[in-house]
Image 1 (cartoon, rainbow, N blue to C red):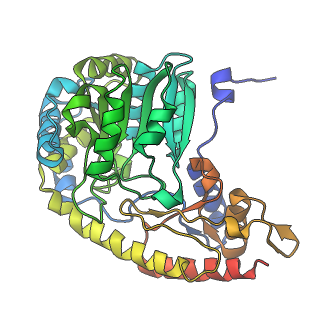
Image 2: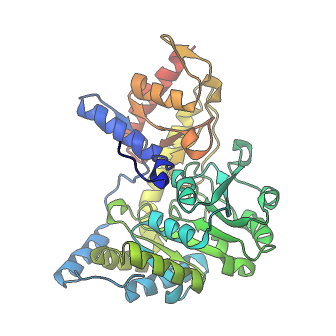
Image 3: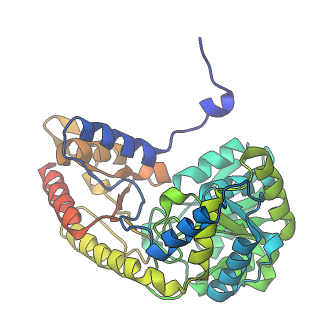
Amino acid sequence: MHKASDRIENLSESQTIAMSQRSRELQQQGIDIINLSLGEPDFPTPMFINDAAKKAIDNNFTKYTPVSGYQDLREAISLKFKRDNNIDYNINQIVVSTGAKQTIANAVLSLVNPGDEVIVPAPYWVSYIEIIKMAEGIPVIVEATIKNDFKITAEQLKNAITDKTKMMIYSSPCNPTGSIYSKAELAALAKVIATKKDFYVLSDEIYEHINFVGKHESLAQFPEIYEQVITVNGVSKGFAMTGWRLGFMGAPKWIAAACDKMQGQFTSGTCSITQKAVVAAMNADPSVTFEMRDAFHQRRDYVLSRLNQIEGVKTNTPEGAFYVFPDISAFFGKNHQGKTIENATDLSMYLLEEAQVAIVTGEAFGSPNCIRFSYATSLDVLEKAMNRIERALNDLN
């Protein structure tokens, strides 16, 4: 009998990827599936970034790259952090990786020992828990409710910290909820974080540029916790560069050095052509992202207006990213043609089979009363999807 390692056996499959794969299988069978399960912008990469990549190819940037990234890219990222986030990171504090997911894994595996506790506010991005498990850490889930816009309070954080706490991971703007921590909310969390000096926080800011309410706020801007924060970002979401695969961190120098050491044994430096393209993205004025942001804002308003017309669906108002995360627990116990909806996973499968719309169960994100829609597609597609969803939910009794 073939058996993978315990590490792999204990690892859960990404439910966002699994749902997307299932919808592709149905599409291949000729079924008209609308896929709202994956978080991927439907916009093309801006042409000035493509042009920088073409120039890099013409100039033969095709050799191995430094593990932490080209110097000119790290200099551009350093300037971006100062310009956009009011954070000073020199190039020795910056590590470029093959996507923000690798950046997060590098940080967790470089800091967490077996038995260390890692605080994760729920709802959380699906991979946080599994990466912590790979490091043999213990996830400590702190539940943020829809009443508090899916954000934890300073009091909740204080109550979750123990002698074994090593780290916290959170995102703002958040995947899956779209919630954004304000400067005042982050300042309150910073006061708690500062009370435990061997406590590190990974701030996942990959959705920074998809913000509908104003200036993005970074946790590392607060000087009292600057040495405790790892700021993670990338280009997949804000610059529509999902397939280019580049993420980066700014961190205390010793953490950056640890991640460089780990990456040197796993993947070494990321793609040379991508790096040269991202130099152009980092040096660009952030206003180049506004057109896409404004389109997402319009789509959010449309999806919310439709969901709020369906009896039993409860929503907050996401302030960023491109997701809505409604509470659909009012449908639990209802049925259609002999099928009873027991939980969010049942409802997700019901919508896939009956409405031919792929979404993701909230159980994947630590919130079993919710489901996640991505609205990273055209208004025409969203209208078609919402018509199907409304009809299918109204059929439940």
